[in-house]
Image (cartoon, rainbow, N blue to C red; front, top):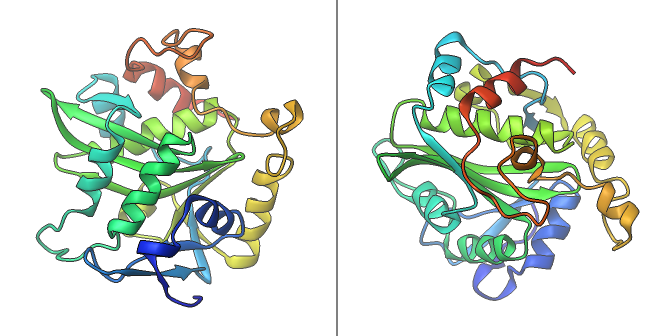
Length: 248
């Protein structure tokens, strides 16, 4: 961990992007904390994109489109839901400074959300940061059974379709492990991160653009987006399940 910074003045988008590019990310001690600290875990949780554990019951839920799953339609609300205190977790690490900078990064096209809806109500989802061919998962939330699992399944399928190579989950949990996440040493993580960012940073050339993952490739693959990028609707669960069971 590095020095504590006052997030009200020091947490800006370029600082955050630079930190993620070297394997460091910000956290706060509580929702009301005025400062953040920087974390570089000795052991890192990652979810291999060809190793997502799609159980029979989860596949059934996805195929049935139990939830309507959207992308980048309610980013601010997903972050707020992730930051809420719940029974058994009275404090969260997402403070106002982190929330604000990620809203800016979303407007810049770097941060994305996946949302799960049930009857028009937001019941789960996740958000994170896309950089090069890496996606840094920040937080996920569930207010209905399997909502966060469905959101993660949709994310993994999207990353696979878009040519991403790294899904960083930060810290291992039993929930993530059940879905295929593994823990690796810091040195192994840095190697994966370096490969995922190779050629994608510090350039505006067409080669640099090709080196980055395409977060919208799945929409085009499923016929849900035009060449101009306009999205017509959610991707069907059967498409997601099919992508998840395909071998690389």
